[in-house]
Amino acid sequence: MADAPRSAVFLDRDGTLTEDSGYLHDPAQVRLLPGVADGLRRLAAAGWPLVIVSNQSGIARGLFGPEAFAAVNRRVEELAGVRFAGAYHCPHHPEFTGSCECRKPALKLFRDAARDLRLDLAGSWFVGNRAGDVEPAAPLGGRAVLVASTAPAADLALVRDRGVAVAADFPSAASLILSQVA
Image: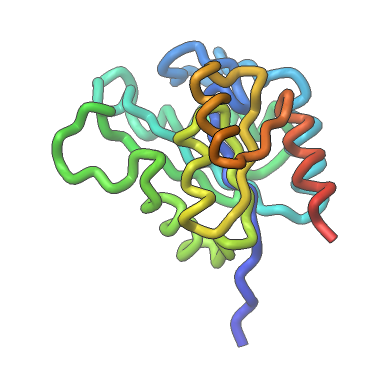
C-alpha cells in the first residue's frame, strides 16, 4: 500500500525567503531575510515538506540557467539548515505570448510537485510576498499566507480582499502555519 499524500508548505523564494536583489543567480549573494532560517527549521521539524515554487524569468532573459536556480536553492538550504523536498520554477518571460502554463499564479508547478512528491494540495499552505504566490491556494483547496514585510502595498490590499491571511514576516507566517495544525 502506498503512503497517503502529505500536506506541504509551498514557498516563493525571492522576496519571501531571500532578499530580492533582482535575478538572484549567484549563491555567494544569497541573503536570507531575518528569521527565515528559524522559521524554515521549525516547519521542517514539525514534519512539513518544504517545496520551492518560483518564477525565474532571468532564465528566459538569458541572465542565468536552470543550474544557477538550483545552486541558489542549495545555498538557501545550507544557510537555513533544511532540505527542500523539491524545487520547481517557471523559466518563461512574464510577457511570453505562448502557452506557458507554469508561471505563477498558474497551477501547473504545484500540480507537478503534488504528483512527483505525493503531496495533498488541499491540506497544504502557500507562502509568498506577492498575490501571485498565494493565489493558487484557493483553486487548489489549500490555505495561503502573504508575508507583509516584503509585499507590495497593492498585493497586500488585493489578498486582504480575498481573505488571505497576512503575516508580518516569514517567522510569523511559520508560526501561523504551526498554530493551525491540530
